Image (tube, rainbow, N blue to C red; front, side, top):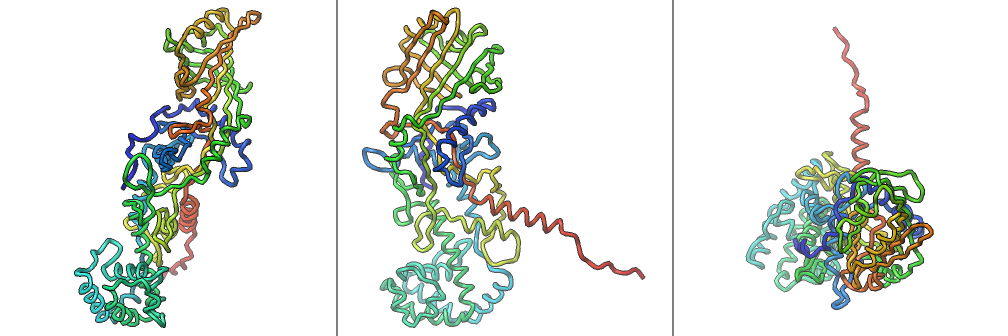
Length: 511
């Protein structure tokens, strides 16, 4: 399967968030949900922990060649971790998870339907042999069988889907008053095969619907699987800017211009005010907007380094004798939606075909005609499991940070920051960049009457609604999709109810 190599993904800018950081992550999600309530619809934001994939590379179209940004592609294709709170991306791709599940599905007839078709095929043995012989004479060999399809099935699928424009069905071919008109895209090599085909379909009689369902559905399964395993120009593969091979198609539903305009709307902002107090050598007590405080490891919360000290915040600012308030402003809150492109059986394009998966979950081990897992699938399809992906993110520009310190040493702190050429900071383990002219800027104000110093860290103008493929948006919350979860829940509930149902057997009277 053609994927961008992992090395082309966005560089790591955060570790997995700590449990304590979840309080702050939830605060951002809650405010973003309020601002974006009209746009969210029925899919709410959930708290999202930025991990090794980093924040969201929203500039999804490369401005130099108009190709899909490979960094964005990798980011939106990551699978979701199972049992993770807040929601987090895993280190694997959703397409990999999809292939694992989809490869174990085939279309099967019930025992009764299979017996009917087997008898009809036995009656049509001579006509089937004639068709196979005609095909081999025209093309030199028979198609190679697959786990779900025999050569006759592959031939039938090929004829129905490629010899007719638009594609047709075996039932329609059987009933066609003018076979030449229906199979209007028959290659020259297939012309002698058409009358033999008509004899075979006629011999199948009324069982043609069963043959059609088996052949066509297994053919569609193979087409969708090929589109995700071996994407190409003919099956809807997507071209991205980081590799020459095509990849399974994803689509960003939000136009790039809307994303940029949203980030430029800096009045659409989320403020966060945090009171900070030192409680131990390694922990802080943090209260958000006056709420009850919580403990968090210092390095999981906030860090600030200067030319002279790599741990200046923890060593010199966050001391027990100082009173600290940290304010952050996340501007340009914007919702971006995206997702995998659904398979179209009529055209054979693209790959995300969920019906076979949900049908297979629903059918379980029941003896019914339809899609089934064979072999059995052990994937957890619920929201607790890994079969899910992000369908949208609420993003903003990287925050402006204001640190106000009341301290007897306020003047010393101000001097240290003023004299530092490079000041680096991080929040929740996410670097805010070096505060140089190419990144964050830093400024200092003092108030002698209150013994306070205020340090302001501001993102550069170029990074607010940045316009290149490396631009990142801070993720405030995410929309998730577990596409088989409802079916999995209903199937499990139905099985539980069935097993709990009391027996109605009539007891045998003793002699």
